[in-house]
Length: 561
Image (cartoon, rainbow, N blue to C red; front, side):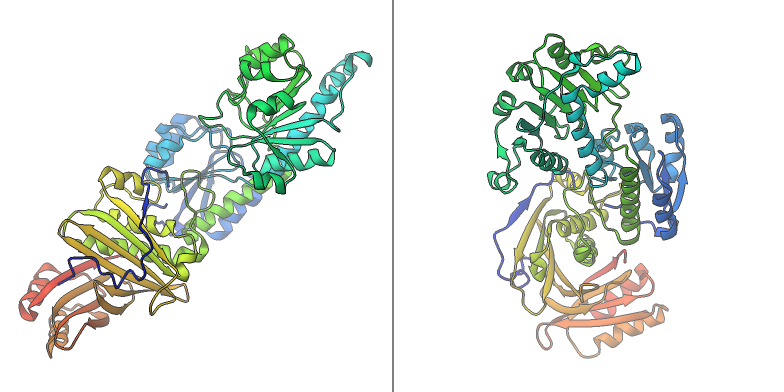
């Protein structure tokens, strides 16, 4: 019989348990073979990006300018969807995407994708955060110069035949204080460029440490201090509930009357009505916006009539180089996803499936599936242990893979790394992680245990050369079992001739045994035989096995290998 309690020999030198929060958004549905995967590109994408996917074997259809109804009508035929900023992927579209595994935004912002609906549906949502950072930073810098030297108004007046030299006097950037709101990659480029102009850079970002600020030669301050001291303010924060309307009337009143504001990050961070009022009343000197709460900007927006305001139509990523890069980035991410199962830059996945752990991710899912099929009752807790060299890598993805494998055998809905935590939480299943650099026998060992009210089933595996998966322990029996689509596990009292009986009964039923491994603790004690088979075993044959061989426990397992 399988041990009822936890097998402490399988969890060597257990570190303190770490319970994993399951309500965090964290994919693939049943993985479609790469050459059968259909990708819909709903916005224009560079030819090079399209070619990368097609050369890899993906079936790519480009259909741009579709309405919501038109997308709803066809999206169910596709495994992947790529958009830029034109197409809005609404809840209706997500719900119609029954085959969809991954959605990709060729760009940074995913405001035009209903990420919540995609997460509930188990769909990965990816973006390309690095492809346009240089272009976005350069546009912000261009707006800083433009707002400092009145360049757009000067150009407009010159074309109108005017020579208003005195009325267009500007200010220098050199020696001024630049306040950077949001100090990510784009904000970092802007800061470095400003420092090359001898500007004094202060940053407001709750997630930047004092040490990091010192390393980059910037001063970390609170928002109020930044508003009071800055001559120029450049916004580079994401739009979140915390940053929405971050800069409104109260903040404009704290700023210098000579201050100039640039927002080339996200619409909604700057309150547009408040900015229009602040400019009209002279509370601040000038501003430049490239992003807006509603895009395209409404014809009756108060911004259109505000003085000393430069408006550009979301041009931050609109360079030939940036469009080429984001197209290539999203294309490579889709190829890696459908070819390798690798997930990169997923906005609704709190982990990345690193190539170093891909084999162990697949192993974790197999062990989770086995645990679900062998558990004696409803699973209450899933324990995932990573030991040896494996513990030095990012192990959270492995825990989620194990959870996905376990839930996939008990749910009629698709289970993915994205929605597995949500499903587990709804069922009251707790996920607990263990890590230890120590491991006996194997350089790396992965352990998955499923705890129920009637006992616990514990399984362990490793990957030879970090590629070839092996199941090395079932309960407290050591094995060397290569995963297969059809597995038969039988626990019995070790007696001479038992293996022969198994083979005879299966042979008479025309069921071929591809491989066999036996594990036992002692001579003539309890043993386990694991058979990999070419075909599933009918119920009638299972009955004959139980009767003829006096088997204590028997499990027929079907795995996705």
